[in-house]
Image (cartoon, rainbow, N blue to C red):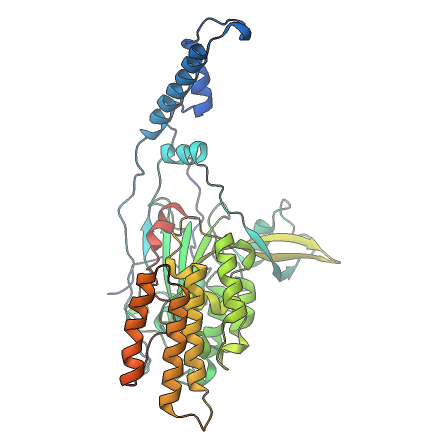
Amino acid sequence: MPPKKIIDKGKGIPLEPISEKPEPKNTHPKTEPWITVTKKSAKKEEISATPKSLQTPEAIMNQMLQLQKAFELSFTKQESGESSKNFPSQAISKSNEVPSKMISRENQTSKIISKPSNNSQIILKEISQNIPSEYFEKHTYQNIINIEKGFFVNNDPFLTLEKYFGKNNFFKPHNTDKTVLFFQTILEITDSVSFKHFYLNENHTDAAYSTFKIHKIIAPSDWEYGLNENLNFPEDLRNLPCYNVPFNYWDYCQAWYNSFLIQSPRHKHTWLIFFDTTCNLSKSPYWFMPWWNYFGSVTEIFKPNIQKSFQIFKTNFIPSEEEKKFPPLALFHSKFHFPWVFSWTLEFTSDPIPIIQRKFRAKWWDKYKIPSNLYPSNILTWIKEQNSKIQTLNQTPNQTPETTIFLAQKSKMLAMLAGAKSEEEIKAISLQFLPSMSDQVSHTTGSDSGSQVPDIDEEIFGNSGD
């Protein structure tokens, strides 16, 4: 299907100024914190005060019961708030027929609208005991442009950059037709990334949250055309100026950076980034490492149990020769496919001349339900299985295939026995392996990805963000 009609003047996504609508007034009665309601309720039913020395145990117990009853009453009132209201979803789909022999698949870019009610926000703020994760500012930054005299605008880096690059454009417009949509579509039609954009209001054209699912990163040796050869977008996309501009491999590389350069009206746009289960990082090019330094995850955002799992992975996992060029953290995310939240902002700096810098931040996604394959014990079991496969591939010339398979089976059995918690489990594991090890040679197969990888529900992120 042809893409949904979008007004595009070559200045990025979106192109028209968006005036942010005031939030609707909450017509519901003001919700008070439970401790306030508790005190009021207790005061109404207050028993006549008596000196502490004259209070009986029964009187003390009655007061405690009244306080508990008041707390339960206030908690029930807040729990009865209305559920979140969701606008109907709208999808923007494009046909991804890649020009001149390029393989294609269905484009999954979509526009999804959702806005939680004020009541649900109040409940989360007042009675939730979970402390939200905070952003960790990465040490990497990007110098965008030196600020000349007469270009400062209200001491605001976003308005100042707008004076240089134009409205909603956050990178140097060497070619004004090469918009964010231009770069995002390159990643889509090459089967490299899937995007989803979520909007707080059906009238908004600026996404509030977006997801970035990585399928593959194409190395120069795997690019099917000449690196400088101009390629055309599919004909059914030619209704926008940005699709009438050809692209080459270097535009593909730049797309990994410029695709992120969109912002919400309040400059709080966030991304949920994760590797798809089909992604094989070992085939990725070297230039992906600088990209990771800007947009990748950091260990500082991990929960304690994930920190422990990562240390086990970093210490014990044996990467292949192709994987050794990537940092352990990138391998950890690519093997177990769990996400991180990313955002960027602009700041002024003057060292020694005034410059606008882009700062990069990452945080843990609090709504992500940690799967069992990320538990430390399961990480260790998985590592032992993977290491045995690598040892099999790197076997010595004098070692027979039968010996190699036997040792791999032995390693796998010992790993499972180490995780057994009862005598029955030990017997079951022994019965599973001993017949095959003594009577026949069996080959073991499996993916190098973490087992039991759950699907990441991007809709949850789109409905409520980070």
